[in-house]
Amino acid sequence: NSVREGLGVFLQNVKDFVSTCCFSGMKALLVEDSKLQRHFISGLLKKSGVTPICMENIESAMDLLKSGSYVPDIVLIDYFFGSGKTSGEFVNFLKKDYNFKNIPIIAMTVSDDREVRNSLFYTGVNDFFHKPFDVEEFYLRLRAHLLNKILLDDMEKTNKLLQLQAITDGLTGIYNRRYFYETLSKEDSRFRRTKEPYSVILFDIDHFKRINDRFGHILGDEVIKEISSIARSLTRESDTVARYGGEEFIILLPETDCNGAYTLAEKLRKTTESAVFKGISARITSSFGVACISETRCSEKLVNLADERLYQAKNMGRNRVVG
Ligand code: GH3
Ligand code: MG
Ligand code: MG
Ligand code: MG
Ligand code: MG
Image (cartoon, rainbow, N blue to C red; front, side, top):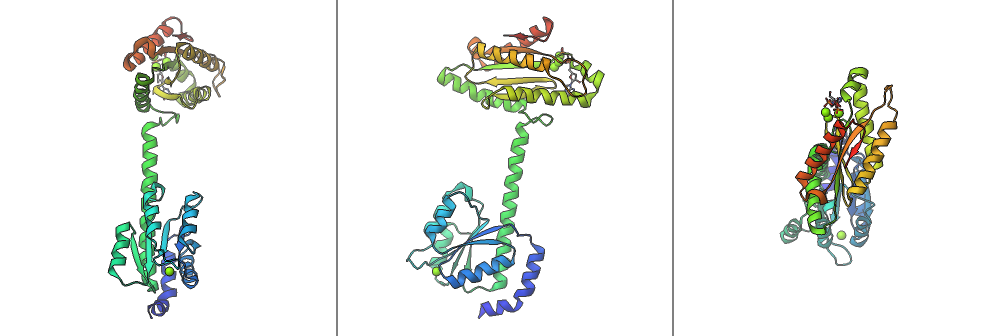
């Protein structure tokens, strides 16, 4: 039969297969009620480097996935189960869960019924392996699905990275100006709904040109990074700390009034003033402008007001907070 024929070319194919693919570390969930089949298919999977977890019924496979502790790279599932159940329920369950959206589902059955086959495709399986297998075909199909899975995972990873890069400042790792404005707009909508005031702190390192001139750009960059992390460490998780420009930073403080924002700015001012920076034998200070939405009622004017106050702080001799 075809399994035996397949086995004839099996060893060479497995060798080629394993040498051209790198599936070690990939995980397969095998749901199959026949012990013999489980043993045979899991053996094939292991030879390709794929690590199988075998389940003999739909319920235990579903429990495993629901636990969240296991996310396979591929699911191979039998069609008929001894209990009279078919795999449809399980396929539906997989298809509904966003976490499993990239996982190829392979249905396996001895049935030649086209209705069975088509209904499986309708429920969302990606492929259909007819039992008994042609081993070579099994591996070729397996490879096609796993390569596709790797590609999807890579794309997802790249997308996430790009999304993160789009909102992050490259030097400091804090948010960028774009993200600040996105968050400001959301915070402003929330303010209109809840009337809970929010504030911003805009601050700028004093005479930073001199720091660069005296100690060089590299150390200047380090100062910018260090001040970002000071700002990060003194604020809450719910605050948004962003690099507004070269040596200028902005902080969005939800649920914070003028007093709260002023207090934090003062704390930041004192902390940066007394901080010691590696390789820099000079005191570094910053000037701060603070404004609260209850003063302007408009988010655009809010940033302008903070900017005007920062400018005042500079004119009044720097190293101070104007709020
Ligand atoms: P002020 O107190 O008025 O703010 O004086 P200042 O010298 O800090 O302000 P100015 O705007 O004249 O100069 C800002 C300096 O910050 C000049 C610029 O080279 C430097 N700078 C901006 N971005 C970076 C950066 O990413 N790295 C370094 N090392 N320096 C930067
Ligand atoms: Mg069965
Ligand atoms: Mg300036
Ligand atoms: Mg400056
Ligand atoms: Mg500046």
